[in-house]
Figure 1 (cartoon, helix red, strand yellow):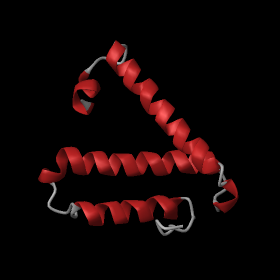
Figure 2 (tube, one colour):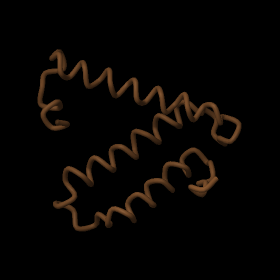
Figure 3 (cartoon, one colour):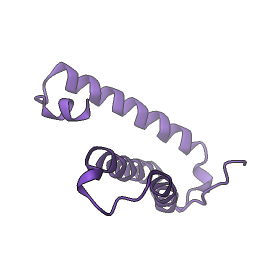
Length: 100
């Protein structure tokens, strides 16, 4: 679906819908993390959250869509661990144990 949407003209209905959905999801995640803004050790928290999402989603998309073309993509578990750590590091926020 991602590749199909990317091939559509920017004015197409499907591309506009995908952009709206992506914007909504990004805003929901940003709002959720801004509730813990005091734990973020960055100067511009909203911008940092959006950049962390952009880089994490981009890396996941690359691994999922084109991982077979890149010999350096780690296994799924390792990729999840590394991207999670990178996300929280970008926000200068400690990665919490899943039991917290």
